[in-house]
Length: 573
Image (cartoon, rainbow, N blue to C red; front, top):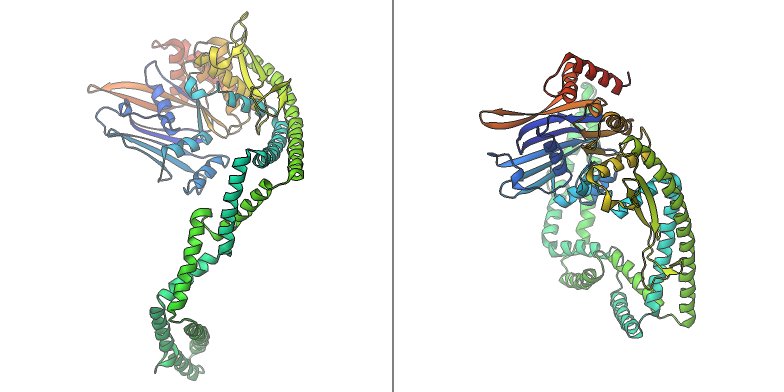
């Protein structure tokens, strides 16, 4: 959930803070008041393109800050993978753009790249309403929505297909290496033998380099170490008035008065414990003094061994453990390349068996997708009727993509295959009767795409199923009114129920009346400069705004009464 949004110097918006809440948040205002500026600020938080022209006239930079209370863990994983701390349940995202072209991004006051921001914010925020932002026209997203509609069955089938793909893909790669071009195979065998020989000749041991580096440090500084150890040992035990002797005398002095001073006994006992600890330290110093030697020959041997290991580390891994792992990989690949005819035949059988298992799993997934597609299309069609698209049809088409040389045949044709099966999913759309369904990306307008997305959300998630992200709908109600507008508001509210969050920009009172939190965007001119303000509304203020949306500038008692009725209806009263 997006809890707070703070914007400074964006276009004509000098400064504004918006405290959003769970449920349906609505932004309204007169045409040209600046509602789109708020959406632009969210687009910047989502990693959208920024330009110096966005900065308010007279200002040197603009800043957008969002305080998120995110659900799920994908956002945290993306940050941790990039080495960014992600402690706590609150995430503060700040973006700063200057006129000089500096574009800085911070997460919890830690600088990050714009690319990382673009990876993280999709887990926090999605914007819908513009074709380039919606993304619903993308085939991969359409496949994801279809599979999501399949619920637990889809998760199980997809996992089965992915596992079968991994088995087949691995077997196919091994077979290709073993039966490929003979000249390339022999060259690869020679390279593998050389690499294995280099590693085996060095005979590295796991963790050996760390131990040798420690030995090198000691040998390089043995004289200083011996001087320091000896000095400490003498101060503790050997010199006149050494620490151990002084502690013993202090303890004895306290014991002598213990009969008269109650606290003296306790102090004497503590000094005795200190003597024991100090004696252990002294013993350790003495042992180490006997171990450290000035040995130039040993230092040379350590340096030579480290030079050998570091050559291996530069070529085969960052640690000796990784080098040993790479050795095992090279040995396995060499064994496959040196297979005899019987071995290659076994590998061919393994690949064929893995392909058959993949085909069986992918066929089951494809059949299930056919059923999900029919069901999803029916549910979306019912939702579109309420969203002022009563004659629209949406179909889910499953096809395949031809790929020459593919080992998988579907209907006698070689097709592309992968870890999510072989289906190509396309949403087909017909907005009007008599028009054949065509790919959604080619025929749907921006407003239709937004409403289709809303219908898809309700159809897949169901009413009251909270999203893990804040969803922003920019004028999803464009071109509709009356009963259809009320249906849009109702669906937005249902979609935001159960702790979800939606921010909707609207010019329709029917939609605004369903808001859990209502904000008004207004524009004023003061001393020749334009200022935009964002104000949270409640009570009579909200009634006035909904009445303005109903009647325009001439607000009457009748329009206020109608506004109250709408708000009560939207609240379910």
